[in-house]
Amino acid sequence: MKIRLIDVDGHNFPNLPLMKLSAWHKQQGNDVDWYNPLIEWKDPPDKVYMSKVFTFTPDYQHPVCGVEIVKGGTGYEYPSGGNSLPEEIEHIYPDYELYPQYKDTAYGFLTRGCPRGCDFCIVKSKEGKKSYKAADLSEFWNGQKNIVLLDPNMFACREWRGLSQQLIDSGAWIDFSQGCDIRIMTEEKAEYIQQMKIKQIHFAWDRYEDKDIILPKLRMFQELTGWDRRKMTVYVLCGFDTTLEQDLDRIYALRNLRYSPYVMIYDKYKLKKRDPLKRMQRWVNSRFAFMACERFEDYTG
Picture 1: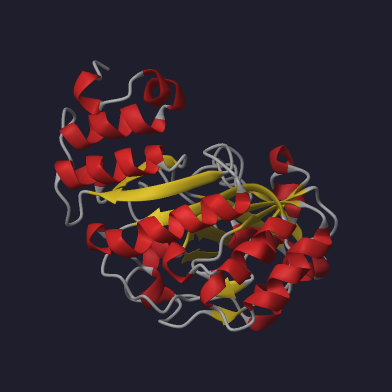
Picture 2: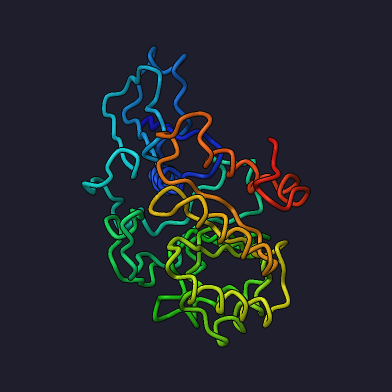
């Protein structure tokens, strides 16, 4: 069979479902490659997989020729659910050859789901309101120097100790790319994290009203690890249910605690070009601008 793949979001980040589909079809002896709209119409593939992760990404702009076309991913299916990979494909080792620009890095989920069920988050609809073990590290890592974890809330999983030990034993540089739940951080969890080769750990401060819980936890983690903004980033959700003043209060507090804030705007695509939130995001997320200008009120960018 002739199998072709389309990463609708672009090739700026590896698409795990496509990597797993590619690995499985190659095992079956099928011809797998990226879809080329200038070529495939002459000899239509037997099957074309189109994957879209983000709901705001525009759909594929070219006509797609194929005997069978399969669309999947949150960008197409949220919030109704939709296609999921069969178990034998979901748990296959990904085909990293699809994205040679990201060599030496493994990507994957050790856990799925999150008990929080926040209204602004899609995880509760996709994976459920419980954090559970989805895989061992060996399912998607085989000696790469770097590991990028995509878990929504690994430390809420009952098996977090065993999974943490796997990360420690790997000796690889670890990037917790999603916002870990600082509200459930303990000294024991911080000690496990300290034993890992941490490249970057991201936390999240989504709800302003959690201030009295989050600030002491962030302070505790910083004091135990001795790390600063070079390793520790905090996603700050803005534009959902907070005012600009509340957003700035969180940003200034994180700066004082030696964390690096990173502004995430809810439904950013709906905002006008000159919206103050977009300007604040440019200031905060530009490390140079944020370090050079201490107060948003003084920012002229």
